[in-house]
Length: 268
Ligand code: R5P
Image 1: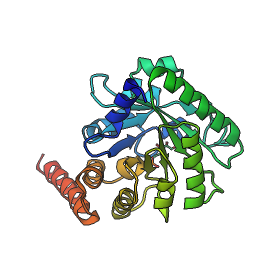
Image 2 (image 1 turned 90 degrees about the vertical axis):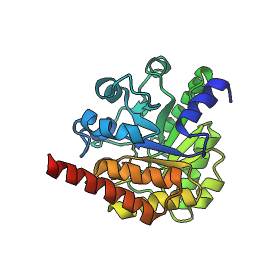
Image 3 (image 1 turned 60 degrees about the vertical axis):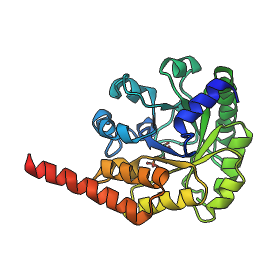
């Protein structure tokens, strides 16, 4: 791995502890104005100080994030479809020049193993890796799951391994039972997505279990920005990922943050 590639990856997966807290706010690229992200700037600004990096599209980056913020960007570069159509029919939607122009620390693309357009998404990943290698920008493969696909170790392990074999520098997938098998069979770092909103304690348990079983961190979206205390949740997730907090300890971080905000609101 060359210097630029290593340097960019180190901005996302922190060399001090080999862990990463990514804030995922790219949902609009196929879901439109997702709950909690209707006004991206309002959602993103209070959370940025607690995220190691932020994952988003170039459109939201340019319109809703202050360029003077020093946070690494994981740029979503695949898309071209919507929730109304076949989701696996994605293509590469951003040129490498534009990824460089916005100073991306990594590029993210979804693969749909088992999906109707599986081959296109896998070939797109390989092409993006070629471009990334040429310019020193790491590629995050997102193992998207079709509606009919099981989120189990066999399927997610298959997807992660294929992504790594095609050259992805790190992989994002879902947590599942026997997750350690997914991690063991994947020779590049694995990060988990949060998935649909679930109760806060369950989302914290998910993050805890994932790092216990080998994930280097989380790229969480809805379970942070759809929480009744988004800042409380990202701080709690941070405590798990970087400070080895237990679920109970992280729960207290969430509750305390929420309580302080409520007190301030009542006092003002
Ligand atoms: C989905 O395709 C997007 O890449 C999201 O970034 C990803 O699913 C993580 O967000 P969430 O934690 O809301 O699942």
